[in-house]
Image (cartoon, rainbow, N blue to C red; front, side, top):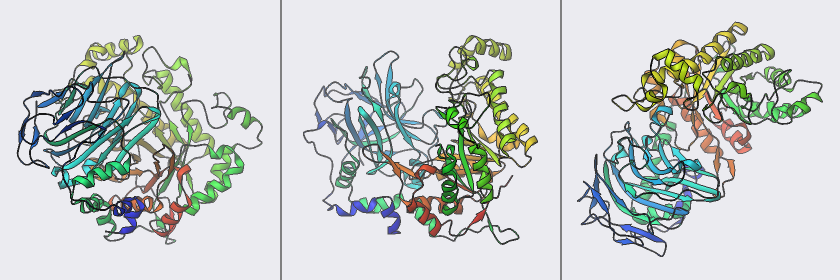
Length: 621
């Protein structure tokens, strides 16, 4: 185990703790519920009603400590949350030994609860969720769906054969300004969301353990052994959850090391090999995405170009359309914020200057469009009643003409090398009069009725999938074809969560694999911003697509502090992620999100490791 990686991810702090004799959890003044499940299906401590409703579940031998609760298909227990759970702040912890295949394919809900309100909400912890829009293979904790308080990660598939061992799960939640919700596995935070959430909905039903029925009428069962359930009346922090895990697991140091074997084992292997051009330069595209607007001030451009170059990147992907107006000078289109006035006072087009200086430095420029995203009421004529919130109506031919024309004009205007499409999905299902009429004419059935039906294996209605695919696919195809009439070498890339071969198709029209197979799209950047990269998912997608080189994992270089502040991730881990991608997935290079978090520490680590030698852009098409 390379200690520099452990230090980079903060695990070395765990060594400062004395290791007590491990044992089952005990209650303290913050404990609302404690259940050991050693002999009977019952609660050992409850501040509210201690009675459990049991459906098929039973206690069996072989728990983490003593017995364990068997939760198979159709089996669950539930408790009254009154007095036993505090929605304003809390933590739920338990040990779980999945019966799932590795990597897990089907969905498995560990707990769920209905919430009040109009519309009502739900609370759920589930592995697999929203499969039709990229949720397969991810673990979700939804604190309150109506407050948009949820977090997710792709950590469990990284466990491989160890998935079926005992694992310590914890979820923590807290309303407030900001509020937070987080998922922990084996003492480590694997995902967290922090956002303003002054209040959340309250329970409107029992807390179900082993079932997702409170949030979803479809069958989602835990399927495994559950032991040592604890519910607290406060949200534990990272160090407190880690301490709880160590107090119950004597092998915690070994488990900590095993968590990172996917990375350390690969980096201990042979160095990657690269093609070289006639001048001896490495041929590898190294893309850096930028969601900000530093280039809007021409005075910043030399610094931007220098930073990109010093870090070793050779492809710059700046966001020029975020759904609230053009971010570049435009004669007729409204511009975002106060950019119109600022640009009018300039004697240079800042984006044209950006392209010029990047090209002089050997850096390609691929403008980034959030294609269907709509903010601040832009173009009301391009939506209709019930168009999904914060999205344009992709089913309106007028919108598709508008956005394709905007992007093609940009390619023509600025002589860019590629174009990057984000938010390339409908965002939901439009059920307005125009959409319903068009759907009826297309398929001869009612849109809303079809939306209620699913395939035998739980997938979305095939007509819905086709209808959504046709609208989004039309945009992708036309951008590729029309853009390449301007620049035959134009590289078309997509930002998404790529659907694997075992997953249901996306019901919002973002099905990237057919676009790759058709040759419309050269690169799909699989957004993968956690510390543990979802390598199993990427492997499965690359094995199924006709051009595996087109699938490029996109790690992040940022993290959030306990106070919610976004800060740069440790440079060593960022460099190790890039090195890992180079070794495991050769093809259309590597990429990183995002420019604003690119620190000097990260630049030094990249230059000492994966980017120690410069490269020229290279695309496998």
